[in-house]
Length: 229
Image (cartoon, rainbow, N blue to C red; front, side):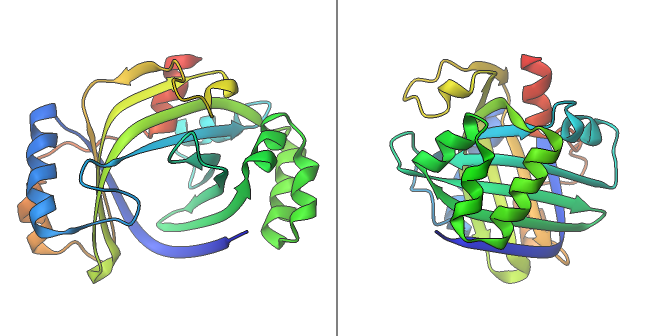
């Protein structure tokens, strides 16, 4: 079991781009930056199962633009893997806190079934806090989100650039581990995400051509929930 807690003053910007722009950016970035540790030359799968409260508090907090908001999810990169990341992403103004716990496939299945007490046996302070949060809000699985990701990193200012394509979603948690999950297309165009600490290097601005590019205010979770409500 691996537990990670990271709090950063971090800027995150999102853009909707064309398929051709996505291909050009991926080719350009691969010549300049390193790919992240998860992906090869052809990128990788990202599949997440999002949990929300009985009243969908996290979804509506995002829609209403609250300063403090959070997302809770299980994440995998291959339906055959025997583990999942259990993550909580919190945002309070410009400060982001990401807490992550690696759990077994069996533990993930228990959480999906609503048996949150399985967290109490993990011997983790974060797991205990998460148990209390899930129980208090009557959290349950709400939405599966999947996409293909090309990710590039630059150590200076912790810069991370991703191009995500083939965004799909579904309501059934049963599809989370399936090789062919039967999800529905949500967004035809790729999304470009740029994250960094402090400031973005001029070299990155030039490569990405961000000047005049309209930002995308909707998160993938928000887009998916709108599609499957």
